[in-house]
Length: 350
Image (cartoon, rainbow, N blue to C red):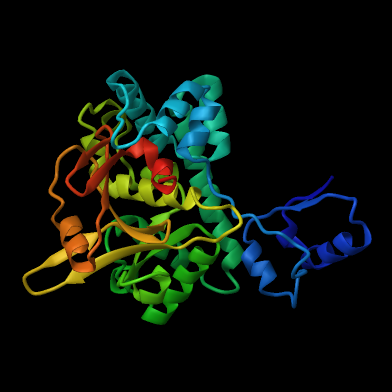
Protein backbone atom coordinates (compact mmCIF):
# COMPACT_ATOMS: atom_id res chain seq x y z
CA UNK A 1 0.00 0.00 0.00
CA UNK A 2 1.20 3.49 -0.88
CA UNK A 3 -0.17 6.45 1.09
CA UNK A 4 0.10 10.03 -0.20
CA UNK A 5 -0.61 12.48 2.62
CA UNK A 6 -1.27 16.21 2.03
CA UNK A 7 -1.51 15.40 -1.66
CA UNK A 8 -3.15 18.76 -2.36
CA UNK A 9 0.34 20.28 -2.14
CA UNK A 10 1.33 18.47 -5.34
CA UNK A 11 -1.30 18.62 -8.12
CA UNK A 12 0.94 16.47 -10.36
CA UNK A 13 0.69 13.66 -7.81
CA UNK A 14 -3.12 13.89 -8.00
CA UNK A 15 -2.97 13.73 -11.79
CA UNK A 16 -0.73 10.63 -11.57
CA UNK A 17 -3.28 8.57 -9.62
CA UNK A 18 -5.05 7.29 -12.73
CA UNK A 19 -1.78 5.94 -14.10
CA UNK A 20 -1.13 3.94 -10.94
CA UNK A 21 -4.55 2.35 -11.50
CA UNK A 22 -3.82 1.60 -15.16
CA UNK A 23 -0.15 0.56 -14.99
CA UNK A 24 0.24 -0.84 -11.46
CA UNK A 25 -3.22 -2.12 -10.50
CA UNK A 26 -1.83 -4.50 -7.85
CA UNK A 27 -0.62 -1.53 -5.77
CA UNK A 28 -3.19 -0.06 -3.36
CA UNK A 29 -3.10 3.74 -3.33
CA UNK A 30 -4.64 6.05 -0.73
CA UNK A 31 -4.39 9.82 -1.06
CA UNK A 32 -5.53 12.27 1.62
CA UNK A 33 -5.29 15.95 2.30
CA UNK A 34 -7.03 19.11 3.37
CA UNK A 35 -8.46 21.59 0.87
CA UNK A 36 -8.42 18.90 -1.81
CA UNK A 37 -11.37 20.55 -3.56
CA UNK A 38 -9.21 23.54 -4.43
CA UNK A 39 -6.44 21.40 -5.89
CA UNK A 40 -8.93 19.34 -7.91
CA UNK A 41 -10.43 22.48 -9.42
CA UNK A 42 -7.04 23.44 -10.84
CA UNK A 43 -6.28 20.25 -12.77
CA UNK A 44 -8.09 19.14 -15.96
CA UNK A 45 -8.92 15.64 -14.68
CA UNK A 46 -7.84 13.28 -11.93
CA UNK A 47 -9.08 10.02 -13.35
CA UNK A 48 -12.81 9.68 -13.82
CA UNK A 49 -13.71 6.02 -13.29
CA UNK A 50 -10.26 5.34 -11.87
CA UNK A 51 -10.52 7.09 -8.51
CA UNK A 52 -13.01 6.48 -5.71
CA UNK A 53 -13.63 9.40 -3.34
CA UNK A 54 -14.48 9.08 0.35
CA UNK A 55 -16.00 11.99 2.26
CA UNK A 56 -14.70 12.02 5.82
CA UNK A 57 -15.84 13.93 8.88
CA UNK A 58 -14.99 14.05 12.60
CA UNK A 59 -16.09 10.92 14.45
CA UNK A 60 -19.77 10.26 15.11
CA UNK A 61 -21.31 9.45 18.48
CA UNK A 62 -21.45 5.72 17.68
CA UNK A 63 -17.73 5.80 16.86
CA UNK A 64 -17.15 7.61 20.15
CA UNK A 65 -18.99 4.80 22.00
CA UNK A 66 -16.86 2.20 20.24
CA UNK A 67 -13.70 4.07 21.16
CA UNK A 68 -14.87 4.31 24.77
CA UNK A 69 -15.47 0.56 24.87
CA UNK A 70 -19.23 1.01 25.34
CA UNK A 71 -20.14 -1.71 22.84
CA UNK A 72 -23.09 -2.98 24.89
CA UNK A 73 -24.66 0.49 25.02
CA UNK A 74 -24.23 0.84 21.27
CA UNK A 75 -26.06 -2.43 20.70
CA UNK A 76 -28.82 -1.35 23.08
CA UNK A 77 -29.33 1.84 21.05
CA UNK A 78 -29.54 -0.07 17.78
CA UNK A 79 -32.13 -2.46 19.21
CA UNK A 80 -34.34 0.33 20.59
CA UNK A 81 -37.11 2.17 18.74
CA UNK A 82 -40.05 4.47 19.57
CA UNK A 83 -42.24 1.45 20.36
CA UNK A 84 -39.47 -0.14 22.40
CA UNK A 85 -37.70 2.45 24.62
CA UNK A 86 -34.46 1.81 26.44
CA UNK A 87 -34.24 0.79 30.06
CA UNK A 88 -34.04 4.05 32.04
CA UNK A 89 -30.63 3.10 33.50
CA UNK A 90 -29.13 2.87 30.01
CA UNK A 91 -30.92 6.05 28.92
CA UNK A 92 -29.48 8.12 31.79
CA UNK A 93 -25.99 6.78 31.13
CA UNK A 94 -26.25 7.67 27.43
CA UNK A 95 -27.45 11.20 28.20
CA UNK A 96 -24.30 11.68 30.28
CA UNK A 97 -22.14 10.34 27.45
CA UNK A 98 -23.82 12.47 24.79
CA UNK A 99 -23.14 15.58 26.86
CA UNK A 100 -19.46 14.67 27.00
CA UNK A 101 -19.30 13.90 23.29
CA UNK A 102 -20.95 17.14 22.22
CA UNK A 103 -18.52 19.02 24.44
CA UNK A 104 -15.46 17.15 23.13
CA UNK A 105 -16.52 16.90 19.48
CA UNK A 106 -15.29 14.22 17.13
CA UNK A 107 -11.75 15.27 16.24
CA UNK A 108 -9.69 12.03 16.49
CA UNK A 109 -6.74 13.48 18.43
CA UNK A 110 -9.04 15.08 21.00
CA UNK A 111 -10.95 11.85 21.59
CA UNK A 112 -7.77 9.77 21.71
CA UNK A 113 -6.51 12.10 24.44
CA UNK A 114 -9.79 11.80 26.34
CA UNK A 115 -9.82 8.00 26.20
CA UNK A 116 -6.26 7.90 27.49
CA UNK A 117 -6.41 10.60 30.19
CA UNK A 118 -10.11 11.40 30.84
CA UNK A 119 -8.83 14.95 31.31
CA UNK A 120 -11.35 17.46 29.95
CA UNK A 121 -9.06 20.43 30.54
CA UNK A 122 -6.36 18.85 28.40
CA UNK A 123 -8.92 18.14 25.67
CA UNK A 124 -10.20 21.71 25.80
CA UNK A 125 -6.65 23.01 25.42
CA UNK A 126 -6.21 20.74 22.42
CA UNK A 127 -9.40 22.15 20.89
CA UNK A 128 -8.05 25.67 21.42
CA UNK A 129 -4.84 24.64 19.63
CA UNK A 130 -6.88 23.22 16.76
CA UNK A 131 -8.83 26.48 16.43
CA UNK A 132 -5.60 28.46 16.27
CA UNK A 133 -4.26 26.08 13.61
CA UNK A 134 -7.52 26.30 11.68
CA UNK A 135 -7.42 30.07 11.58
CA UNK A 136 -3.72 30.03 10.67
CA UNK A 137 -4.62 27.75 7.75
CA UNK A 138 -6.82 30.51 6.37
CA UNK A 139 -3.57 31.92 4.97
CA UNK A 140 -3.80 29.15 2.35
CA UNK A 141 -6.78 30.99 0.86
CA UNK A 142 -5.12 34.42 0.71
CA UNK A 143 -4.81 34.35 -3.08
CA UNK A 144 -8.61 34.07 -3.27
CA UNK A 145 -9.90 36.00 -0.25
CA UNK A 146 -8.25 38.15 2.41
CA UNK A 147 -7.47 36.20 5.58
CA UNK A 148 -9.08 38.88 7.76
CA UNK A 149 -12.35 38.54 5.82
CA UNK A 150 -12.34 34.76 6.18
CA UNK A 151 -11.90 35.11 9.94
CA UNK A 152 -14.67 37.69 10.08
CA UNK A 153 -17.12 35.54 8.11
CA UNK A 154 -16.23 32.39 10.06
CA UNK A 155 -16.87 34.17 13.37
CA UNK A 156 -20.20 35.37 12.00
CA UNK A 157 -21.16 31.79 11.07
CA UNK A 158 -20.67 30.85 14.73
CA UNK A 159 -22.57 33.85 16.10
CA UNK A 160 -25.49 33.35 13.67
CA UNK A 161 -25.86 29.62 14.34
CA UNK A 162 -29.40 28.28 14.42
CA UNK A 163 -30.83 31.04 12.24
CA UNK A 164 -30.83 32.03 8.60
CA UNK A 165 -27.43 33.46 7.73
CA UNK A 166 -27.66 37.21 7.07
CA UNK A 167 -24.83 38.57 4.93
CA UNK A 168 -25.25 42.11 6.27
CA UNK A 169 -24.34 40.88 9.77
CA UNK A 170 -21.17 39.18 8.60
CA UNK A 171 -19.08 42.27 7.89
CA UNK A 172 -19.30 46.03 8.06
CA UNK A 173 -16.44 46.49 5.59
CA UNK A 174 -17.18 43.94 2.84
CA UNK A 175 -19.97 43.89 0.27
CA UNK A 176 -22.37 41.00 -0.40
CA UNK A 177 -20.21 39.50 -3.15
CA UNK A 178 -17.05 39.52 -1.03
CA UNK A 179 -18.82 37.87 1.91
CA UNK A 180 -20.35 35.28 -0.42
CA UNK A 181 -16.92 34.43 -1.88
CA UNK A 182 -15.43 34.00 1.60
CA UNK A 183 -18.34 31.86 2.73
CA UNK A 184 -18.15 29.67 -0.37
CA UNK A 185 -14.47 28.97 0.32
CA UNK A 186 -15.31 27.85 3.87
CA UNK A 187 -18.07 25.60 2.52
CA UNK A 188 -15.84 24.16 -0.22
CA UNK A 189 -13.23 23.33 2.43
CA UNK A 190 -15.96 21.60 4.53
CA UNK A 191 -15.22 23.86 7.49
CA UNK A 192 -18.76 25.20 7.22
CA UNK A 193 -21.72 23.01 6.23
CA UNK A 194 -24.84 24.66 4.75
CA UNK A 195 -28.42 23.72 5.61
CA UNK A 196 -30.50 24.98 2.69
CA UNK A 197 -34.17 25.91 2.71
CA UNK A 198 -36.36 23.54 0.72
CA UNK A 199 -40.04 23.86 -0.13
CA UNK A 200 -40.14 20.08 0.53
CA UNK A 201 -42.98 19.59 -1.93
CA UNK A 202 -41.44 16.39 -3.25
CA UNK A 203 -38.29 14.36 -3.80
CA UNK A 204 -35.48 15.05 -4.36
CA UNK A 205 -35.49 17.78 -1.73
CA UNK A 206 -32.84 19.64 -3.69
CA UNK A 207 -35.38 20.32 -6.45
CA UNK A 208 -37.18 22.71 -4.12
CA UNK A 209 -34.05 24.24 -2.59
CA UNK A 210 -33.53 27.98 -2.26
CA UNK A 211 -29.80 28.71 -1.82
CA UNK A 212 -30.63 32.29 -0.86
CA UNK A 213 -31.87 30.94 2.48
CA UNK A 214 -29.28 28.97 4.41
CA UNK A 215 -28.41 28.15 7.99
CA UNK A 216 -24.78 27.21 8.59
CA UNK A 217 -23.07 24.60 10.76
CA UNK A 218 -19.47 24.44 11.96
CA UNK A 219 -17.96 21.05 11.13
CA UNK A 220 -17.41 19.94 14.75
CA UNK A 221 -19.34 20.59 17.97
CA UNK A 222 -16.16 20.66 20.08
CA UNK A 223 -14.66 23.39 17.90
CA UNK A 224 -18.01 25.20 17.86
CA UNK A 225 -18.54 25.27 21.62
CA UNK A 226 -14.98 26.48 22.26
CA UNK A 227 -15.32 29.37 19.83
CA UNK A 228 -18.72 30.19 21.31
CA UNK A 229 -17.21 30.19 24.80
CA UNK A 230 -19.77 27.94 26.48
CA UNK A 231 -19.22 27.31 30.19
CA UNK A 232 -17.87 23.77 30.42
CA UNK A 233 -19.06 23.20 33.99
CA UNK A 234 -22.63 24.25 33.18
CA UNK A 235 -22.57 22.17 30.04
CA UNK A 236 -21.52 18.96 31.77
CA UNK A 237 -23.25 19.31 35.14
CA UNK A 238 -26.70 20.55 34.17
CA UNK A 239 -29.09 17.69 34.93
CA UNK A 240 -31.80 19.37 32.89
CA UNK A 241 -29.41 19.64 29.95
CA UNK A 242 -30.52 23.27 29.50
CA UNK A 243 -26.98 24.43 28.76
CA UNK A 244 -26.98 22.55 25.48
CA UNK A 245 -29.56 25.03 24.22
CA UNK A 246 -27.04 27.87 24.26
CA UNK A 247 -25.91 28.61 20.74
CA UNK A 248 -28.22 25.94 19.35
CA UNK A 249 -25.61 23.25 19.99
CA UNK A 250 -28.25 20.52 19.87
CA UNK A 251 -29.31 21.58 16.38
CA UNK A 252 -25.66 21.69 15.30
CA UNK A 253 -25.08 18.20 16.66
CA UNK A 254 -28.13 16.73 14.92
CA UNK A 255 -27.16 18.17 11.53
CA UNK A 256 -23.62 16.82 11.81
CA UNK A 257 -24.84 13.37 12.86
CA UNK A 258 -27.23 13.28 9.90
CA UNK A 259 -24.32 14.03 7.56
CA UNK A 260 -22.13 11.37 9.19
CA UNK A 261 -24.89 8.75 8.91
CA UNK A 262 -24.89 9.05 5.11
CA UNK A 263 -22.77 6.88 2.82
CA UNK A 264 -19.11 7.91 2.80
CA UNK A 265 -19.20 7.68 -1.00
CA UNK A 266 -21.64 10.61 -1.24
CA UNK A 267 -21.34 14.30 -0.51
CA UNK A 268 -24.72 14.78 1.18
CA UNK A 269 -26.79 17.95 1.52
CA UNK A 270 -28.89 19.13 4.44
CA UNK A 271 -32.26 20.89 4.19
CA UNK A 272 -34.69 22.70 6.46
CA UNK A 273 -38.15 24.21 5.96
CA UNK A 274 -39.27 27.69 6.92
CA UNK A 275 -42.52 29.49 6.27
CA UNK A 276 -42.82 33.21 6.84
CA UNK A 277 -46.43 34.28 6.84
CA UNK A 278 -48.15 37.30 8.37
CA UNK A 279 -49.81 35.31 11.12
CA UNK A 280 -47.87 32.03 10.93
CA UNK A 281 -44.10 31.88 11.20
CA UNK A 282 -43.06 28.20 11.26
CA UNK A 283 -39.77 26.34 10.92
CA UNK A 284 -38.74 22.68 10.86
CA UNK A 285 -35.07 22.19 11.72
CA UNK A 286 -34.31 19.43 9.20
CA UNK A 287 -36.13 17.68 6.38
CA UNK A 288 -34.72 14.37 5.16
CA UNK A 289 -35.80 11.49 2.96
CA UNK A 290 -36.10 7.97 4.37
CA UNK A 291 -37.18 5.10 2.12
CA UNK A 292 -38.41 7.58 -0.51
CA UNK A 293 -40.54 9.41 2.06
CA UNK A 294 -40.13 13.00 3.27
CA UNK A 295 -39.54 13.08 7.03
CA UNK A 296 -39.44 16.35 9.04
CA UNK A 297 -37.22 16.56 12.13
CA UNK A 298 -37.60 19.02 14.98
CA UNK A 299 -34.83 19.36 17.57
CA UNK A 300 -35.58 20.15 21.20
CA UNK A 301 -32.64 20.46 23.57
CA UNK A 302 -34.66 19.56 26.67
CA UNK A 303 -37.82 17.54 27.22
CA UNK A 304 -40.31 20.34 26.79
CA UNK A 305 -41.50 22.51 23.94
CA UNK A 306 -44.41 22.60 21.58
CA UNK A 307 -44.33 20.99 18.16
CA UNK A 308 -46.62 23.41 16.37
CA UNK A 309 -44.29 23.84 13.39
CA UNK A 310 -43.91 20.09 13.02
CA UNK A 311 -47.67 19.49 13.07
CA UNK A 312 -48.21 22.37 10.65
CA UNK A 313 -45.67 20.89 8.24
CA UNK A 314 -47.28 17.45 8.41
CA UNK A 315 -50.69 18.94 7.75
CA UNK A 316 -49.53 21.17 4.89
CA UNK A 317 -47.52 18.44 3.14
CA UNK A 318 -50.05 15.70 3.94
CA UNK A 319 -47.46 13.49 5.61
CA UNK A 320 -48.12 10.78 8.16
CA UNK A 321 -45.07 11.00 10.40
CA UNK A 322 -42.63 13.45 11.94
CA UNK A 323 -39.64 13.04 14.24
CA UNK A 324 -38.74 14.86 17.42
CA UNK A 325 -35.13 14.72 18.64
CA UNK A 326 -34.53 15.53 22.31
CA UNK A 327 -32.96 14.09 25.44
CA UNK A 328 -36.17 12.11 26.11
CA UNK A 329 -36.26 8.35 25.87
CA UNK A 330 -37.73 6.69 22.78
CA UNK A 331 -41.50 7.19 22.60
CA UNK A 332 -44.41 8.11 20.32
CA UNK A 333 -46.88 10.96 20.47
CA UNK A 334 -49.73 10.79 17.97
CA UNK A 335 -48.00 11.03 14.58
CA UNK A 336 -44.65 12.00 16.12
CA UNK A 337 -41.85 9.54 16.85
CA UNK A 338 -39.42 10.63 19.57
CA UNK A 339 -35.74 9.70 19.30
CA UNK A 340 -33.06 10.61 21.86
CA UNK A 341 -30.13 12.76 20.75
CA UNK A 342 -27.87 9.73 21.06
CA UNK A 343 -29.88 7.69 18.54
CA UNK A 344 -29.66 9.76 15.34
CA UNK A 345 -28.36 6.75 13.38
CA UNK A 346 -31.62 4.92 14.12
CA UNK A 347 -33.56 7.55 12.17
CA UNK A 348 -31.81 6.49 8.95
CA UNK A 349 -32.41 2.79 9.66
CA UNK A 350 -36.21 2.98 9.90
